[in-house]
Length: 191
Image 1 (cartoon, rainbow, N blue to C red):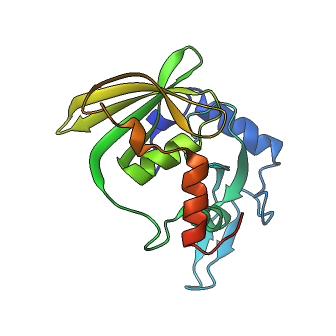
Image 2 (cartoon, rainbow, N blue to C red; image 1 turned 180 degrees about the vertical axis):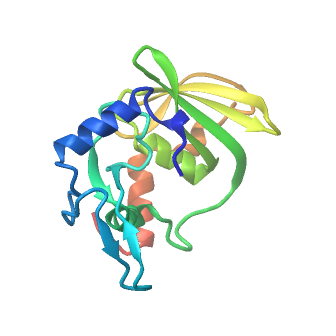
Image 3 (tube, helix red, strand yellow; image 1 turned 90 degrees about the vertical axis):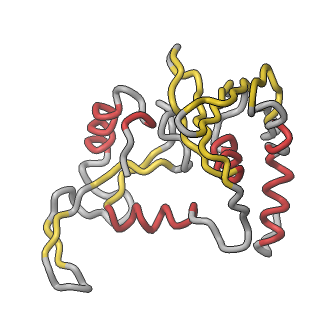
């Protein structure tokens, strides 16, 4: 679901530019925007709407993020790679952590994490040397915050400041290279 807070202020203009550059066609299957198609499942007509898909899941806030123009069907198919596989992740609730980054001289919401895995994924999607701030939110009150920098090896964790419930959060963000290797082994993949 679209949440305007997670996108640059000029998102609608950027979207129009990207659609125009793609010739108003899906970059995967070539279907034209606003085409009327027939559903193979129901036999009913439906209208195709193109959207802008981010190649990295949590980079909607990043003005220069790599994107592509996709129809709904191709967008769903592309996003399947980001779905969690059963047993490979943990679901430790953390209420909510809002992650903010500096973009264009202002603090923008990069994403909301509800688990440590969500938080790791958000940080993994950030470009190197990204400075980010987290706000831990419980019952609509910020109960802690921290300021960190992601280093060039893909790990986080230069801690600039931690307060309240964020004190000690950095160890929950192990070097992401280690996390990826461990995760790949659980899925039977080799790097």
